[in-house]
Image (cartoon, rainbow, N blue to C red):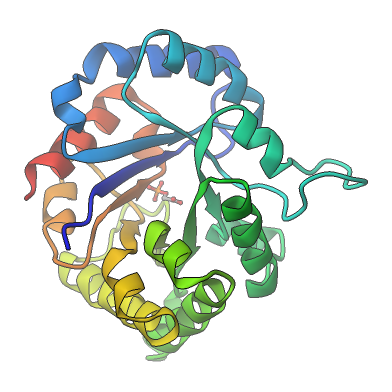
Length: 259
Ligand code: PGA
């Protein structure tokens, strides 16, 4: 099966709505339909920017999907400060990140919380990008694979196999995020293959074949082609380098050329 590549830009807590409009307009000027002919591109602005970015993307027909960085596991109710997946879907959000390591580490999100969010995302017709990844200590101790298998198994168990086949899982080693030192293509391939194998164990071969496994952590225009050239790496989740149009477009083009 040929999996369609995915390049996702996670803006994290950067860019207010005016800055977000500028960035997405700039992306619109630089990205041609040819750049995205063989792959999907998503941008994940802060919640307060979503409506503005949605308007610009739809008005100017910019070839990117709208994404969110997180959402509530609940659709509605007395959950002060949470953001409803129903409301995200109403804004034409297509992709929602769940279980980013910053949410797990800084905000105490457990595998159980992440699983509930995955169900909420799928229930509302959107596509989850579930993040998994080991810490430097776990890698040094030789337990990286166990950590990934635990995270992936919990995530995948929350969904039925057809839903798993349609989702994305981002392998993001915690030690590579925002550090400028990405995993080597060989290490990324090895870990992404572990992820796919774990998906197969829980959800079966078809789900393992369909699920898109992304690499994330210090992705740049220069290291994208080699990462995405690995057989089990179906795209990239980009933080810092997604905050400026030239570097993000460079990554999109590198990912599209690497086939
Ligand atoms: P980075 O972030 O590209 O800035 O390392 C990646 C991520 O956290 O998704």
